[in-house]
Structures are given as structure tokens and as C-alpha cells.
Image 1 (cartoon, helix red, strand yellow):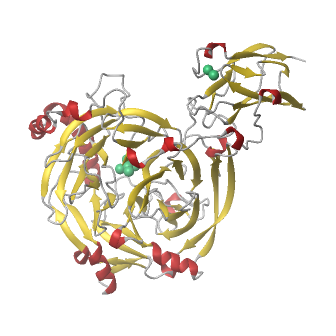
Image 2 (cartoon, helix red, strand yellow):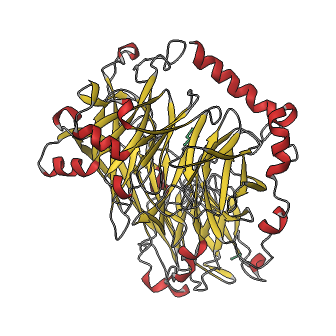
Length: 640
Ligand code: CUK
Ligand code: CUA
């Protein structure tokens, strides 16, 4: 038991030690802070940051966009949670984005943003993010910075090892954190072992449109599949997933998941999988999932239900999966920019073990196996290790890379980032974090082309870093300059939700403003009205549709009569503006919903069930012109 529990305790106490009485770190705290830090993060008013940083919102369910190095918050993009600020998930057009096989699920736990890549380099087209709780992947279009698509992952229990991309965004992967009965059924939990399965899902991405499609799953033994990264360069065509609970214990308390000395990295040859699919070597399994796509043309969501999935069974498909033994309870698995080195970050291990992809291929060819698990060959550990970083710190979680052959690993328990040399495995530098770092991010740091200027540490505990705000403190990001030999701390800034992971990209690679957003004449929303003369109120039984327009500085119609208590009222409002940055808002008194925030050329719909008779004002909620306050109207509600 004991190791796991002890380390867990250590994790908690360790986190609280740093701020006050750590001897080891006092010196380096001062040393880590760059002397010219202020000038390095200062972006003059009116000037732009060099990088975009995309930070997962964790339990906020959203994705926040920061400028780096300033740490300025630029936007919060609603993804998995309703957002009253933008009406997302409240208006009729985007409610469908949050549909699942469980019905409307307006929240999730978002962990890992991942930029699309071309030739292993971030390309600024899309960013994907996983919903961990009700397994989903979202695609955000970086020409609009809006969520374009959400696909549910079937037969999965907690979509954690997701949505890491292959080097040309052929796929984003989605490994299940929890194994579950596959297909789902009612059964005793204690019968977990051998009955629960872990689905590793490959979601194909259309190279032109970005549209996602659940292409196939690999049905794996009932382990927990924690994190993943796909190969690149020489390991292109493979994906690596870390596992824990290879004991298949149904409870992780006490005897739980730390009995085995080693867990595995599951290596999936997805090129081989494609061959097996082509050869028809798959089984079709029941699946129950929903796919939601938002259309910029109709400004509405199309939700499609699916009921089957193609599944590859490792026993039927030799060469598809191998297990790489790795020190116990690995968390992250990271692949260096060349694709040769695979770093499994064993949380409960004293050393950091790095595997060689060349040696992995060699061991496969020479069949240097150490038995098998469920028909999956286990490679001999000694045959595949490239090197060991000796006693780098406590509780390694994640590794990213720079463009000079260095790796940076986060240590949760010892609360630091450690820089080491890929190939020689020597430790070059260490910098404390405040406090208890989880992921780290270097722009391009998990791609073939890292941009080794900055590193962001994503810390779990803020404690004394900011003015106190009661018991709930924001999580913290810390920016380091990594362009020199030593890491220099530059900046702390609070984040939204829990920023498990982040991605960064040079701002020059993202081109949102080059797009002409929503031309009014191309608006194909079924309830759009494009001139004031067409506005009207239409009754069909107790359903009332108000066709409205908004333009500086009036709504048309602005006074509406003939509505009755109990009616189902839809306000379909088209923003006639064509200046791209003039949205109008809309809400009506007592609307138990939210506001609308309608972009120029778009149509959005607010649903309202009036409860009382009377005369109720509505107004524009977004300051749009000097006469914004005049942008108002009334709805008269009669009882009969
Ligand atoms: S993570 Cu999800 S528990 Cu290390 Cu990627 Cu934070
Ligand atoms: Cu329109 Cu304010």
C-alpha cells in the first residue's frame, strides 16, 4: 500500500513546504528570477504579443487564449460548458453542440489542447481539446476562434489520453482513462478483471475541412490509459499510450494500482491498423455516440447519432500493439522532436527512463519478448532503454523539448522543472515552480519544430502568489525564458479553471483576421431576415416566431404585441452589420436563459416562455454605438 499512500501524502505536504521553509530551493528561487524579467514580458500598449498561448480550462470546460510573453488574457472560447457571455449553449443555434448520447451535457472537464500539425509542425489551422468526463473531442477553428465541432467518443470511460495528434493531423487519438464494460452493461464491479476493456480510439480528421470521424478503436485490456503522444519522424505511424493499474484492480485503494513494479507504454502501429481495416479484419461493435457540427453558413448545429464502430482486437491483428515496460505508474509519455526517444514519466520512480524507438523496432524484429499480456507481446525492458536520467527529482509528470536538443521535465512533488540533455541524459539546470507543477508547455514543444524561447509551467497550487481571494485560488502559470543555458523565471499569471495543458504558437502562424467573417448575403440560417421590411411576428398555435433585425441603433420590430402567457416565443435576430467587430446583444426581462451575442451577418435565436402578463423591456446587451442605450424595445404579454 504503502508506497502509493506515502507518496500521495508527500505530494500534499511537499506542495506546502516550498513557500516557507525549503532549504534546497531558497537559493534557486532568487537565481531563477531573471534580472531583466520586467522588460522581457512588457508588451507596449497597442503592440501585440509574439505568441498565442491556448490554455485548457480544466473544470471550467473552456479554452482560454493568452498572449505571451505578456500573459494578457485575450479570449475565453466556450467549448464544453455553456457560456452566458456569448450565449453559447444557451441560444438555439449552439445548444446542439452539447448534445450527447446522455442528452444535453453542458459541462465537461477539458485537459489537453492540441494544435493541428502539418509535417510535424503546428500549422495554426485548428486546435483540438478533450472532454474528460463525458468522453468528447472538440475542434476549434482558428480562423474564427470558435468551437466548430464536438464528437463524442463511444465505449470510453473518461477521455484523458486525448486528443494528441499525428504529424499530419491524420488522426487525433482518444484513449480511455477508465476501463469499462465493453459494450456497456450492468455487471458487478468486482468482476472488473478480464471483463472491463480499454478502448483506444482513432478519430480521423479531414485534411481540408477538419471534420472528425470515429475511424476505429483498438480494444485493449482493462488498464487505465493515462496519456499519449504520437510518434513523429522515424516513429511516424505509431502512437504511445501510458498505462497504470495493469493489475486490473477494481479498487485502487490499498492494494490498488502500485503492486506491479512496472506498468506499460502501449505502442500502437496505426499504419498497420489501416492495413487491417482495409483487409476487413475488424469487428463491428455497437456504439452510441453523437457528433455535432456547427455550420458558419446556416449558423446552426447539426447533430448526428451513430450506433456502431469498427474495432480491432489485438489478438486478431499481430504486429498492431506492443507493450513497452516502464517504471511504475507513468503519467505523461512524450516523444522528442526526432521521434527517436520516448520518455515515460514514471510518477513513483526515482529515475526517468527513456526508450529508444530504434531499439523498439529491433526488439520487435528479433522477437525479444518478455511474455505477453492478453496476446500482446511485452518487449524486454533491457533491450529498449536508450538511457536513464538519474534521480532528476520527485514525481515526474510531463516532458517537452526545445530546439537545441534539450528536454524539460516537470516534477510535481519536488515542484520544479528540470532541464536535461537528450542523448547524454545529464541534468543541466533546474528551476523551482510555485507550486507543484503539472504540465509544462513550450510552443511547439511536442512537435518536430519546437520554438525554444519560452516555457510555461502550469502549477496546481498558488498558495501565496497572489492577493488572497478566499479559499478558492486561481491556478497559476509561470513563464520562463529558456533561450539561454539557465532557465529564468519571468512572470506569474493566474489562469481560468485548471490549465492542465497548454499549447503555444507564433502569432504569425495564426490568421484569424484575414477571414471575412459572416457576409450577410451568404447567411443561410432558415430564420434569417436581411432587411427591416421583412421583419415580422408569425404565430403557429402557441409557437410565436419573432423575425427581428439589429443594426446601430435599433431593433426592428421594437414594439411587439400579441404575445400570450404560455406561448413559446423564438426571437430570431439577424445582425445586419457588416463591420466585422460590431456585435449586438439581446435579452428580454425575465428570460430564464441568457443573452444573445450576435456577430455581424449572423442570426441567433433566444427562446422565451413568458410567465406573466405585462409589458417587458428588451435591450441590446453589448455597447455598440453612442446610441447603444437607445437600442431597446417592449414585448406586450396578454393573459388571453
Ligand atoms: S493532466 Cu489531466 S490530470 Cu497531467 Cu494531462 Cu492534469
Ligand atoms: Cu446594439 Cu448595443
